[in-house]
Image (cartoon, rainbow, N blue to C red):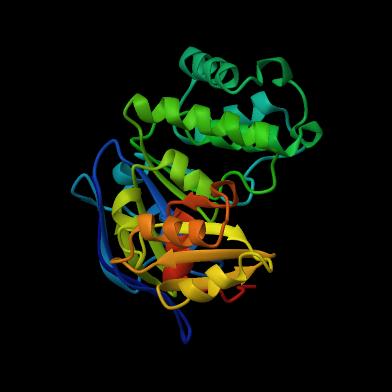
Length: 305
């Protein structure tokens, strides 16, 4: 459906996107993960037509995604990171403006607005000014504004920034329902749990390059360890920790040891060593690698401002 081939975008001396190639098939819920400044928003803005690439091509269903190609652009819906709403106007008035921009009129527009407001539980607030809405309500209104014209592809650029857990969950439920109906979604975020829950395939971008691409299981397989065992750091566990340091990766933080065994180290050996030191099994917890672990492994732990 969506195809990017060797797409590059520069801002002066800074290369925001460096020869990105990507294929998004119809009906996929695709996650785009990356630290701040990684290139996520730049990629979204190129697909949406808000910026022009310096090199490479973008196509949607074989049509070039250029500013001049209206047919391709109207097949897109964009939920920007920063709210695109008129705060002095009501929810109904906002949706009417966005609908008319896409050529919707009359009974069809009224019907779509009614349906959209019901779908995100805002029908009873339709005549209220947007400035009186909570952050979560504004985010939900921003979302349905992008879907009034029923696009084939929805671009969500960090759509849950700064909202409460209940509102985030409502947005997730809404997007999952639309995806089941066949909507293709590209979802940009830096929240690991969002990508884990929503996305069938994930791309990790950093410094303008696509460093990894695949399903969650495929990404987890890239880690140099299979499992992590955690146990308290104490005088009682110190002898065990000393033995383990040569048999895997042992780190300590927050008074907790984290042991990631070498591939040839069996868990049965671990628990035999623990038993030899008279350490009860309840001290130990075993955890599979997470998407966050993959992310940090590929992008590093240095803070980004």
